[in-house]
Image (tube, rainbow, N blue to C red; front, side, top):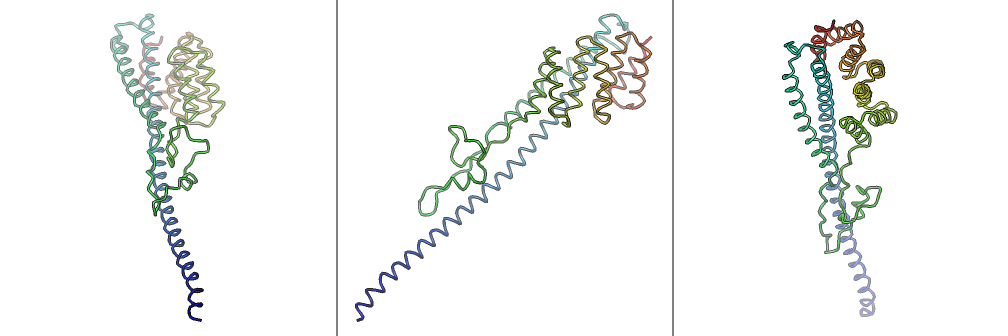
Length: 296
């Protein structure tokens, strides 16, 4: 009787022990995967902070580049006045050599900023460091599917991307690329296509921080084409549509200069005076004062 009972108990005990071992192994796997998930989520948060920092730095550099471009355009207008004889070359306020030096200095600063922007954009589009894969308990292979549920991109990864790789930092935004493309055309003096690109940008992103900049550069394009009537309309749009934007002083200044080009010095003087009264500490106010001193 005892022998028969023992034979029945042994398989039951063996089964119980195997089940317990499997349960312990499963718990270890779950604990391991939970640890991996926490690690991935932590790294994703860190990369999110890095991504936001890069965006901020890019926006700051872009704003500074826009400011320098505006200053170069204004100085170029002063240089034209000297070269065409509108302003006497002996006038100390409009020293030709000094204007050349200012333009050269601004272009150097612009090139330096463009280099920094290219470097940041490269960082922005580079894939983040992959999360290292550890071996599963018991020598089994890692289970990438759990990581993929957390961080996998919607589209299939490119060939050569390692298993479990964290999604790359986002590319330069479409709106920033659209704006940069328009600026490149402007810098190349391709005014008509630049105007079309800037208008397209404003239509596509009406509430974007760069919308007032884009509107201002449309005016600059017309000014570069010597279509001063159209330039005045576009500069006035900056003042009307974006009254609190930082491009208003520059737009008023170029509007005044456009009226001067049309030989309407009375209106030009009124607009320049408005800059001095409303934005007395701005660089545009300083230039407006200089211009008013020589207007007849």
